[in-house]
Structures are given as structure tokens and as C-alpha cells.
Image 1 (cartoon, rainbow, N blue to C red):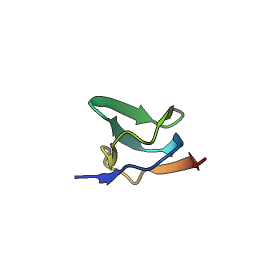
Image 2: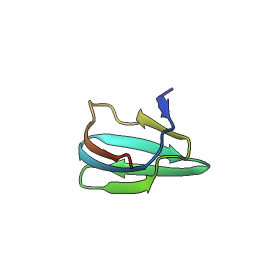
Image 3: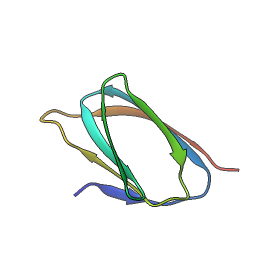
Length: 64
């Protein structure tokens, strides 16, 4: 199912290992190790692991 969020600011996610899907509004982003995504976190977004192994990410949240 994944985990849903929505909060003020911006978000940057960098995938260290594994594969994830980050949905921002209606746009679906599939990321693997080495990929990153930057977006307006005021838009409803969901994160879920789509791989067969544990996914590890670095997530930086900017809140003005």
C-alpha cells in the first residue's frame, strides 16, 4: 500500500538501495539505487517499496 504524506515545503529523496515508487499527485516515479527526486511536498505524495528487498533512502525535507 505504501505510506502517504502531505506537508508544507519541499522534499528530496535519494535511493541508496532497492527500488521504490513515489507518487506525487497523479505522477508516478519509479526509482532505483542512484536515482533521486525533488518535489513540492505540499502535493499529496506516497512512497512504497516495489522491489523484493529492503529499500534504503536518504530523504531531506525543507520546511520554510
